[in-house]
Image (cartoon, rainbow, N blue to C red; front, side):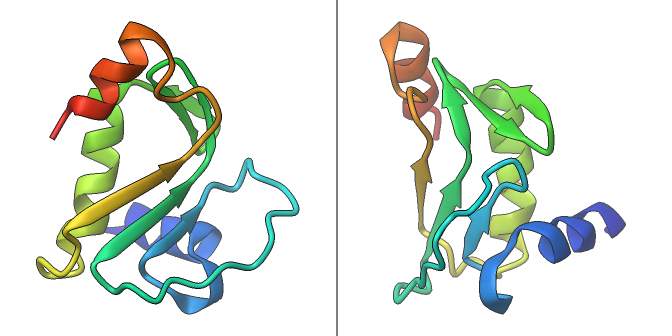
Length: 100
């Protein structure tokens, strides 16, 4: 999957496969992830949507984007932390957070 390799080259920090910082987030401080089973996902957000690779994505699109990132870790990822302003705000945001 060439797109997945490109995502890794652009967005994963410090060679980590569990810390994703979207390219739209500028000057984000270096972070580390001590929990190998957690995907840390940092982006811009609005009610129920995340800005990923320059496009606003709804909950279903986010799930489709994140699934290959989780699958490549061979079942190691059991939890996703999303850091994005306003993502969980309002009814749409609450619904987005509830999607498994």
